[in-house]
Image (cartoon, rainbow, N blue to C red; front, side, top):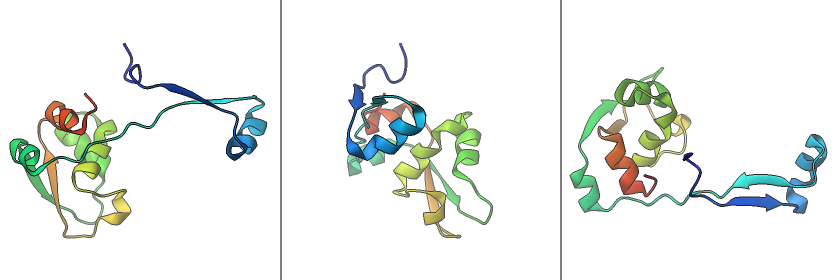
Length: 112
């Protein structure tokens, strides 16, 4: 079972995707629905063990994910948990909280 198996596949023939359809030479664009991530409650945050990291010049979310989760693809978990859209939103000296248990963090977000 794939990681996208619980998401609907959407087919779009809307005007918005016209340029993309023409570029690809297709009549429809198929894509997965966007998952809705839950924001953790205070209680859920209290139940997640985190480690703190002081953001410094040169830091990358994917490097932190690789260091703590052994998988750089989970950079977005750290960004989501700290309410950052991208690395560009993080200022030097910011305190980043990294959930240690990836499975629990994903469960709180409703992705597991």
